[in-house]
Length: 186
Image (tube, rainbow, N blue to C red; front, top):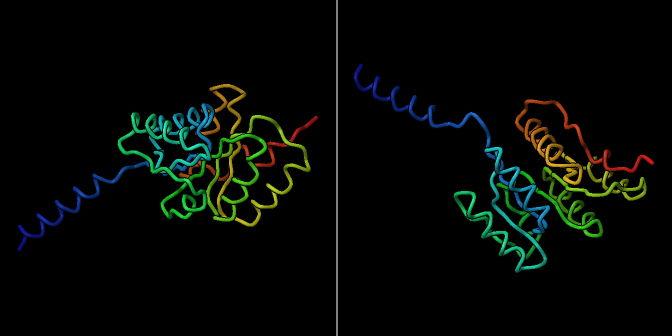
């Protein structure tokens, strides 16, 4: 009897050892231009994220991104031609939005409706009138939003991504760059 108990304890310990100390966050990329892909690669390089879904209204761009991402991670992300179907994924932890200023609102607001964590790449600051609907949408969701500004340099981008992941992991109690920080101060 004692031998059987020891065997079970050994199997339990082996299972515990297999648990990763860090969470791996599943990302869905929206916008497959060079900025979106570079931000996504930075997320993947942390070892805390993988791309599971890719959406771009330009199918050839999405297919090219899927091949590029597959070369740097174990599994190919799924391609979506319907943004809402991508957002329906229960395993999607982060929506990375890197689209033009003209398109960002529709993707951001829809991700808020689906209550997703959002990392939005904003290259230009927004006027108070432009930012207000985005701020209002964040008050109706439980997910968190982080503003990325890769236009401020690689080190700034890396810091913002690490800040976001630290918050999601519970290491910080707030993000440093919520959506309100995208407003123009001039």
